[in-house]
Image 1 (tube, protein in one colour):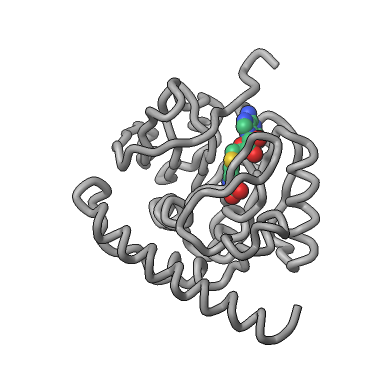
Image 2 (cartoon, rainbow, N blue to C red; image 1 turned 90 degrees about the vertical axis):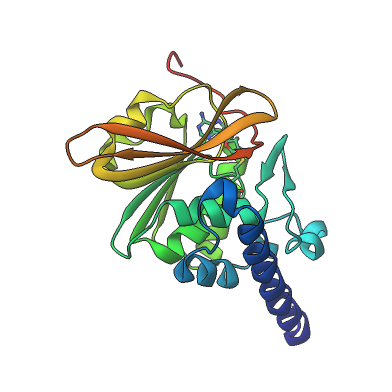
Length: 228
Ligand code: SAH
């Protein structure tokens, strides 16, 4: 890639971040946050989204839209990536779990903010491709594996924060178990396609679990399940 093309992507990324800031203001009555955190926005301004989409789609990578990543899956709209990231309130030493690696873009954004990101993908070719991107881009704090995220990742639990990037009828119990007291879980809930609500779930210091509806969203379904 030429220096000019690089420069162009950086400019497109800055525009994307402005668009995210605009959407955050517009959605403030629903989300309760008019402004997303500085660290979140800096991560959005840094991660090269065009390297996480098919090469033919690089020029659409910084539009504030979801994109197809093959095998029926999608990379979320940048505003949703930023909002979900912000809701996690990640601190630099945090251990974070993501279910649904997909392209790897969301994991890379999380890796800019956290100590270590563990990410699980159920579709093998997607998981492999994402792992290749993490390596090529030097994300050494992302540990990925192929598998069913319903069971979480017990060997590395507990986590400071967990994000699920596919929709499910209810929160897989293993994920609540693997969350630290004081931890946060962000997940789209709803069993019908296109009718889901993004939830912020908190596990209080005493273990009590509370949930707060944040925004209407649309995600691909979480497949697999407890019996598999
Ligand atoms: N976070 C991704 C987008 C996720 S799309 C990104 O940034 O690109 C949702 C992903 O979840 C898909 O790749 C899908 O295959 C995966 N998925 C669905 N069910 C899953 C499960 N049970 N465990 C792990 N991954 C799952």
